[in-house]
Length: 149
Image 1 (tube, rainbow, N blue to C red):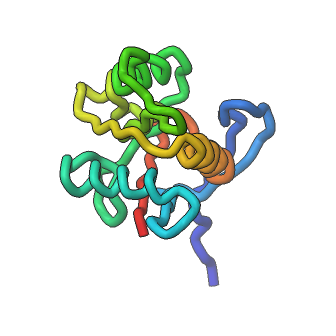
Image 2 (cartoon, rainbow, N blue to C red):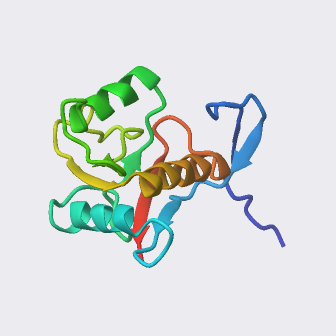
């Protein structure tokens, strides 16, 4: 009996490391929970996906492709959350789709959502996203989705 070999991608293209790694060609999903450690972040993403009909929602084919170019990421952040936007103490401006995607505020054609959320949740949720990228070896233009539970 001969079994087919599943397709696997191996590369050293993951930003921040030169180590070679391999992944199966699936569409990974970042999960944020409304009752988890970043509830304000999760609620903002849920609002953006459901009310503003922005891409990346679980169980859809409207994926978010990753962006790794730092200057474009910065442009996305500046458009969604300009420094002129007032931030009360303890709050930060959160944007969706993420600045690190091709659907970000600048690279995505201007369809985005922003909201002031708890600063710690925003920072920790961003670190969780960065870890998700690394664990799943999501490189430039790799697709993923965001599941709000």
